[in-house]
Image 1: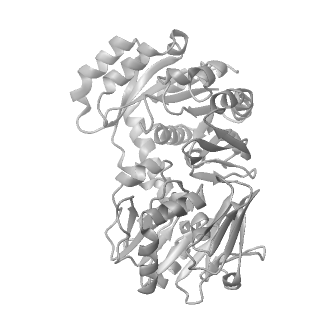
Image 2: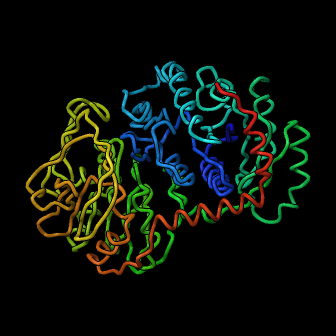
Image 3: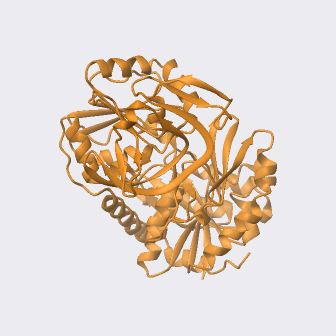
Length: 487
């Protein structure tokens, strides 16, 4: 049938959630729908059915569509490793590293592969809902753009611009975008949506009409603040420091926010547990002494994040927690940090070198170019789980004789310390299974509520879809999608 693209006046205006909600709304109307994001930049990723990886937001959008995540849904993924370098994922596979010097030229050269992925999705669905990245108003990046107007014009996909009224200045953001973008780019934008509105939308009626008059674009609606968004996995680490604990349970579980933290959505299922208060600890604050469990999440630059952990003094907090008999869980990069040593002889995550780990597990890690990307299932702590592996490196040592995980294919993974207090594994998604959460909480003196994380996500998507049906002109959006011609 066609396609439409949601772009934003900036980052974090709610594009990912609106794409997911719109996908679910269209599916509920009986359409076959698939999500697409030409280029993403995120260290939160998911393994796909075809053995690749894509941004976490596109995996969530696939769930909203009732589809298996596929590498075509996010053909270019940049995973920041340092302030000036990113790992480049193309078609779900690692292709190398991009630095500040070659970023624009290398990115622009990928447009052909982006369009191929898009065409394959178009052949499989009635409607493809496309998500932009950042803002089309970043005209300094336009020449090599494949994420916003560069893609929209190449694929002839009509655009709806999203403005975030909660951050203020939404009239200037929308009208200003119309002013600064190239006229041919502006012609691709068919209208706008106001997002994150709190209160009575009638109070913004004059502003809404002024945007229409000044931009020449029609409005497709005003979306209220969506509380259900808090129940969805977040993609950007920038959200963590301003997110309050979801519950106030008696068991405090603390996770320090490291600069290159990745796949921190591993902890989101803990928000379903009334017994738990999940605290994401920002830089400048100590890890609370009263924590029942400290979790070290994944990292895109393990050695660099380990140095940052020490600079914050969190290594001292973690060792004190361990001396008090507190439990510690390391996931992927966090598992590596808990070991005796991490070696990166080929500079896979930064400058070649090695570093001493925290020494709480008798294991050593060597990073390598080969990346494990696969869905997995098995048993941990005598409970079932389903998850995925996504890591570069191998970890071995005396404590692996007590593996945390046994896979269904007979392989083992992870380690448990001799005192039973320190656990580590490469498996992501371990806590999504309520049985696994119950087993972990029992280990630290808690009780699991048995709530299904996947059911919670589906319910949140349905709630968002119902709200969009009420507040957006979805009939007009579908009609606009039909205008999209093949690239």
